Image 1: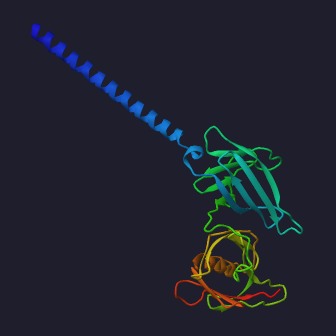
Image 2: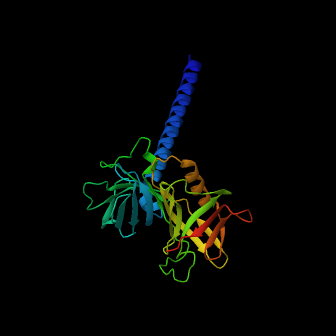
Image 3: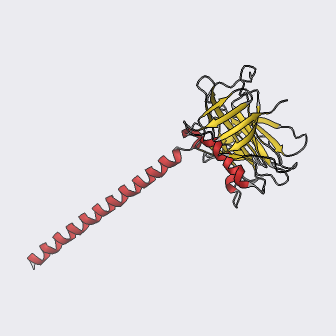
Length: 279
């Protein structure tokens, strides 16, 4: 009987010890999970991203070719929003200024003073996404078209184009990937490329407008185009338009003689040939 009692007592001690150990293990795990959650919540767009800067894109439009949109956010919580309705006669840029606030999660900015238009933008790494009137993410086929990309400045912007033969000229595309570009009839519009003095380019691709940034070094004849934004008109000849946009993303150097220009990749044959449009 005494032996049985001792054995029972030892078993009780082992059981209690295991229970305490199991309880401690569970408690430690809970603490770790809470810490991880707290760490995630402490780091958000407002305190972890280099979000201040200028964002640009062309957003969908129900009754125009697209809404050219530029949003500038400063670190002291001020904004400048500029929109322009493309394809409308005499359309002028509309500018709104004010302050912005972060939502409690720190991943959306809310623009003050905006009425009857979206005022909430989700902030990601080098982009912002316009949200709907209720501050919710837009869904559907055009969901990914509501993104504005952050602009980067390759060189100090300058509007002085007097000494730049590249910037003061409007160029007409005459050959693309070895194929001549010809106007089939009077209704066919020309493909146009123009470099602006503020390191932005605009282009007309037969149906849609393209726009973005470029890097230009006229001493070494180097040029680089960023992946730009585009209006979203449905066009009969989308293939040539897509080739034109892809060409701009591919080239890294150019040549010109005043009236003619080629855009090239390394030492390959010219990807595109242009002629100067005489004023």
